[in-house]
Image (cartoon, rainbow, N blue to C red; front, side, top):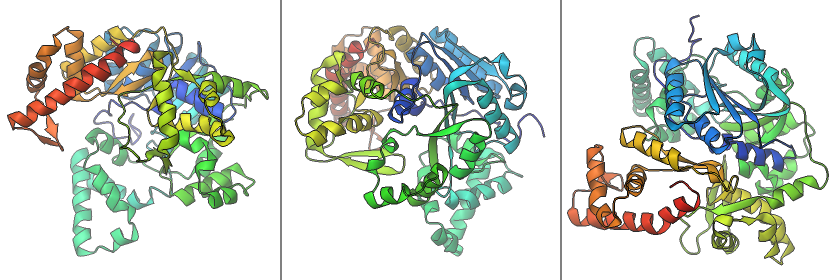
Length: 506
């Protein structure tokens, strides 16, 4: 087998951001599940870093720590190194490497407090996967934490026949054409012999979702020769072989078993084996994607430490998020779960944090404003759900400035780069940015008078080959366009500019 090891390496992956991999999020998830991690001066490994954008965001948010990214595609490493240099990020380095070779000399990498592997472990050949896990087991420090997200069963059962068709079509067609041909095959079956879609009802929903998904993602998802979703019990067994024990989940809502239906929760916890409990949980929820945390040796808190650390953590309000309509619940999706948050609980909490401004509010301060013992006890989980859904962000580095990063990334986007997230070092994460947001950020940074923004916004979009959209379609009516531009500019000036200033992004 050649250097590709059966991996589809004919095109690069997306320029994504994965909030669960951010060091603070890993630190918080581990803390909730009673494992102590270090958040200052740590070393962090991204095994399969792709284009490197996600890792660079993490490095920007933690300038006192060291980040290393590994990927075997030269295209990915070239982009990652170029972006890091452009942004002046000096605490990150990227290695073009093969996990099989690196596992033979792990000492060359040193030891790490955190290691992450996002999405790839069920896309690669078994021999490569075994080498990857061996490498992680060797370089992770005792007490270190490993994040491994991957496709799992039974949730992916419905797409196994489709992926098999993609591989068959790929014998005579290129990657994208193979996906299109396999999709056409299923379309024909839908009409001529629909029994397979009736037997696998999840297939139809995934096909609908494919229509809006990035082609770069689809190629990596379906065109790999060794694409193989795994049962969680298999993954737990593989991890145990390299001294890594299952800790829990990195999907924050799933940290709280009380959010499961009560009868299901009670039944699951009759299982003495963690492996059996997690496998049955996946069956019950039809889980298709897991974000697992493993540890190389437990590092538990002393009795009173965990509560103190959690209660002292401060959070700030994110004004970029749109609140639900009056009286409507907060619909929070956490993995396969959907939680309906009561507005009478969530809104006052958010308002309290919002009123605190950039100083934020701690969990202990939020608890102090409540008299009901049940509501006080629920603050930790409520805040965590609000972080997961981006209504709240942790105040991790109040003195950090991200202005130069904002300038460099805005310049790159205006030059055509497909970046969709802006790092905010003050809060240890990144925030989603649409094309209009980047243009308005450009106008802000270049000191164009706000009185000219209504005219400048559509002009800059036009130069970029873009146009304003309404319900996904371009707007040609001048009056409608002006009305939409007025609203966008007003929101940016009144809400987003003060927020970006408060977090030192501009």
